[in-house]
Length: 79
Image (cartoon, rainbow, N blue to C red; front, side):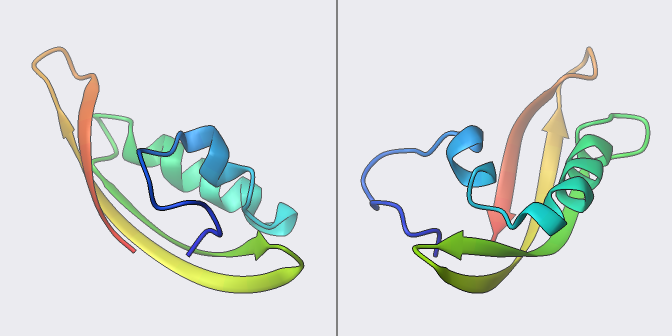
């Protein structure tokens, strides 16, 4: 979906680098809310990604699990 090789895990920076510039602020706000243990735990966002000159729309939903100290530890995603 992101125009990246399927092998191995991808860093968040590699994925964010492909988000359309007009959608970056919305993605950042939704991500910040999701990793905030007081307000978050759920990420839902639809945005455009740029892949070799093509624009694709992606919708992602994720749940964040927090540890006892409130730090986000794991996320499960549906793309």
